[in-house]
Image (cartoon, rainbow, N blue to C red; front, side, top):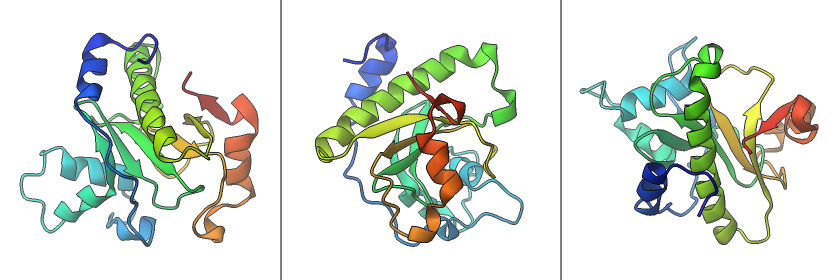
Length: 179
């Protein structure tokens, strides 16, 4: 069990086993987001049922590794390591809107990530994992965290540059752990 995990979330997670890690090939360019739109919000909008008519976008579910009623783990479009997931609330939450009132939700997301991390450790016993919030803002404005293996072996070498390496390895000044 995950320490301090709310009972309702723990019960739901125990009933939702993770699938095998099988990211789509090709990267972030496969997510058809209109210019200036947040790809993460595009995927969540299609998964949420808000858009009843997917208008040809139903295939976005292939970017989902795992989903609960509150959170979703998506394959990173430009992964920085062998295993790299983007974890986000399923509800739309702007990164800039996160404050003390969201503390409970952030804690619940950390429990969700810990659950996924346990499953991934079993699937990839030779890898070490880290999870947290990257403090340098990126293009994605939806509140999200990262769960990644620490091998930092990006499938495409051009996807891991110095700033990304520093984001995930320079300690709490750049990557705030979930725990």
